Length: 98
Image (tube, rainbow, N blue to C red; front, side):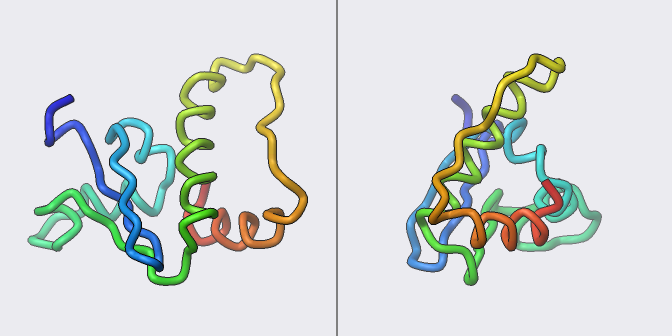
């Protein structure tokens, strides 16, 4: 995987998730950060820091991005969410427009 094909998402605790750029683009917010004109750090370095999103939640979000790519064709399948993560995931999803 080439560096320009990946994006680094950084959690509040500083944990780094390196994922395919295509997967990250599932999020409208991340897409806007990475494709906005101008010289924003996110665009130049391919890194997005989420100071309010924990490592556990960001990991689940990354899993969702890949799940969404795989099942975007309309196949009926559920994305598994642990009940204890529901509230934090809903707040993060609202922020990320996923």
